[in-house]
Image (cartoon, rainbow, N blue to C red; front, side, top):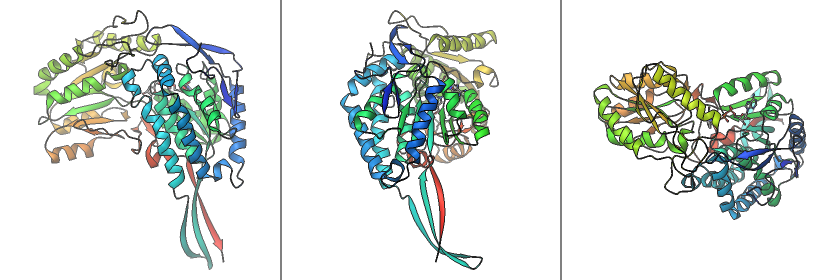
Length: 491
Ligand code: NAD
């Protein structure tokens, strides 16, 4: 039995809900480990059908067709928002069950904010200036009136992960549809329903056939097919850096545009004039939210060497108060880990730290399940790590914080930057000049100063270095799905 009354165990291709060619596969609740229903098991052949439908829908360039009609796009995105809003409590229940996210997070970034973001994309679709008159120019004796148009970039393959599935699905699908593209969404194997529910919702909203297509699958194969497919113009991917590298390579033969949102190992640096307790508290809370399964969470806490002991004591105290709990409980902020493989990965990193002589200041072991099953890990603080060790350098994707000492502002920035990733970061301090110097020094795509919130619908989001290429969200995220067409009119 599925949660959503319509069919979340179907693919959505060319306007129709249809079975997966690979049958169905079980979906599990990470909080209990129990099977909760079925999802459609799409295959590469299903991906082909979805691309063909999206191609037909995009290639219709007649007046009033999807790519040509921003007003229709805005209207239908608002209709999709209404459909989803009408069933928000069912979607919430499905999201908590499938993702293991806490109820509280569904009221924000895990569900409500991205669904409401459809209205932002609708407004952008309607209000964006798609054509600009650049006046006249003369080249080689020919006078021309110049116009620059912006038009949808084509068929988009949106490939998404399991940790914040609504947020990432909507950042891609909402923006791409608003820009006049057509889309094939390939959700993560662990979280198919948050993607699949868009099928019946888009159908009810009256979307034209082929504009949005959804292929869920227990394997990565349909995603691989989308990346290689010659009829896909843009791949918008969020996931691990390892997969990002593969995707870039597989997309190369067909030279398509590749947009990547990848991993992170972000640092919160605390200058010696900062409110140390506030910095430690906020970092402990953010790195354990959703059991630490967030690419932007700061998972390295870099504190003044002379305050290291105090920082360890405060952070441990805060972690002691963060008790993983049933996601349905409104007090829960730290829930389960998505699956056994991910739990093993988290345990493996902590064991590695131990074996390398680091000190586990708090936690360091699986957490006894509050629900009688599922995958749980105790918030964990590790000190004494070599800053170049794997545990201090690699993304763990669990509630694990590495604490490292620094010897001054520049050293703190150096440690923050001495990592292949550059997705987010935080700076804590008081003196505006020292803060400004640190802001300039930090090589990241997003940055929080003294607990400030940088994430928002109108804020471009993405990373530098090996955290990704391009931006989503905001106008920059919309423009990723547009191409320029420069036109000269002879007189
Ligand atoms: P993943 O890379 O294993 O999978 C992500 C998606 O890619 C899934 O839908 C998967 O089926 C698909 N996929 C896997 N291999 C593929 C291939 N060769 N070709 C095409 N598609 C393929 O990542 P995950 O385990 O689902 O998510 C966790 C990772 O995602 C973490 O590393 C995390 O940091 C990252 N992440 C990044 C951001 C960001 O915005 N930067 C956001 C969330 C998660």
